[in-house]
Image (cartoon, rainbow, N blue to C red):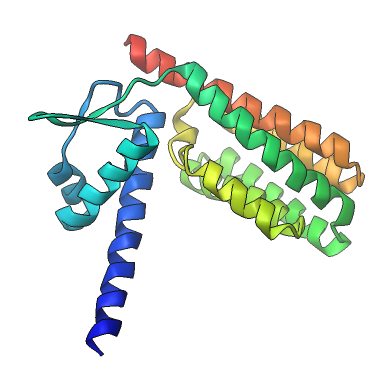
Length: 225
């Protein structure tokens, strides 16, 4: 009984630590926390409503990943990061995503395509209504559904590791992102409907490359501000 409770507590703390790491990583890559900024364990714990233990574990994890540095007697600081680094992260992501989207184009059923069309229509409606939170959510749903259609769980697992290093939020605050997302998703959807795997691969490469460039430009502007 006690062992089971201990395992449950460990899993819960690990989940909180992962959520905290995702939160801080997004702040860094989006330029909310710039290189050299101090990151306090207590501040992260307070922002997320968690204890300092999972918050500290999260910062240690980000130190291993290279996002943070631990300065003796000064604590954690954001490590050096450039717009080029951000673009590189998206380029690598595009290589794996390209394989998934190409497979989805080969095997998507009419029902699955209809589902993607509905998501895309809802995304367009959210953009028109200025609901940027919903727009970000639908963006991730669109990608997730395409990757699921690919029926390549191991490749999806690898992509999941890569997408940890790019923020899931803050996109909507970047100038030009909503418009480019609608256009790029339309191109990806057209290639899937045409059952054109190489066209779909090229479309996702273009989309993620474009997203990376927009985020990198946003990040560089924050550096220079």
